[in-house]
Length: 170
Image (cartoon, rainbow, N blue to C red; front, side, top):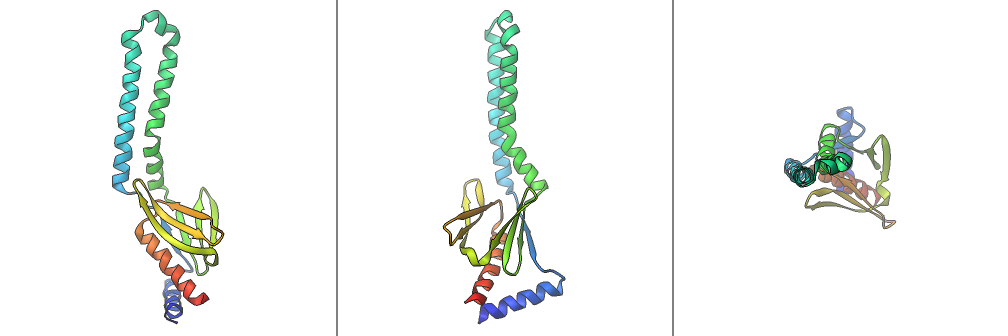
């Protein structure tokens, strides 16, 4: 009974604001961003050392033919070491969307919409394990959907709307 009234109140409030849905965005934790930058810089430093070792210990004739291999390897390691930081920066500039509606949630990933009907949801959990945090949705079909980099606020919003829906369905 309470859930039905609270959902109707929620719906009235959103309609008063001219909203049919709530859109939540991912948020990248600053500590996570700093950690990825530090680890990436450390790995990049190792790759610089790996580039310097052949130039110091090998002869000029050897490097004339194999120096390009060392240089390409250096660039590859440098690129791979800073990639996680770049991904998080991109996510910070262009966050992912979670759209909560009356009877379903949709997750936008690379212009693809993953629709999650509330009837199929068994439970919603917030996971925060080291550098991996977000919303985990367990479906009745034993499938788990993980929505990365959503904050606890986004989790609470989604959980409250889901609980209101669940209250109406009972």
